Length: 401
Image (cartoon, rainbow, N blue to C red):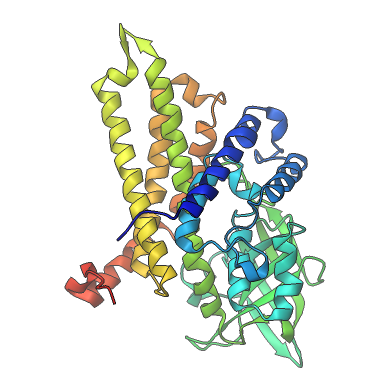
């Protein structure tokens, strides 16, 4: 595999890096830049998004014919990692979850009318969006076969009743993608719908308090009690909800990893910078074997994650499903992000535990990485299943041509 990138992609990466360095990193040190939930304030966000548009760094992941930058998945891996050197980066460039995954699935599967109505406002940054799938017990989580929320067809409309929770961004979203059961068929029993926040028949029960800093709109519990959705708002067709979900979640899991690598590298940057200058007992921290061991181990594991992400991205770009590659990347990167933040706090000591750096922010944020879009254990089960099915071919080399 050739890991070199084109000069054009390198130029884009450099421009992102300069934008992050000059505009976003200084904002992290100013308490006025944050909202009440420890994310970038909307006033500051609007200003920085306008600057990103002006710089030609907006919606780079979307196809050019839809108004995006035309990056493929391998290009996204390079750019998303650079964007998330700052905790504010992804949302400023309109590449943050859940909008990122919702835009990509609507770009891939939405009709022209659905793209005009539901996709383009998200791409323009006029509205935010959410993906409503996860349910409380006994409903569907990692196993969508357990889904309880139902959409009953009545004429040319569907009536939805059910219960969802941990729906990221719901409190500020205007456009929603909803997955609901339309039959008891094991394979064709789910359907994906589009609805607007102003539609009657649903409400946010609560914004669920969480351990770490929150995305805009939080993580919400939602009740559906008679929401009516016209048939024209079905994505793909009735019974193809799992196809929609797979189309969305596979790249979304990988883009999470791309962004997390940027945060993990930032933790190592902060840790190394401090270790280079901090002295104790006549020796700089960086010269101590114990510190060098910690830094070297995490640096190696970040690079392993980068290679797994790029392998999965290349597989998606050539039309493959990349199931096992994405699961490997998800487990590897989620864990190394947490460990990178932990090591950075340890090396920085009390400074790392304080809010003088963003490491403690990243540490609290990082714990969710091993849960969202499939817990570690689910992805290891997927890998075990692939190993049983493929045997020695699990490790096969792909032959050119």
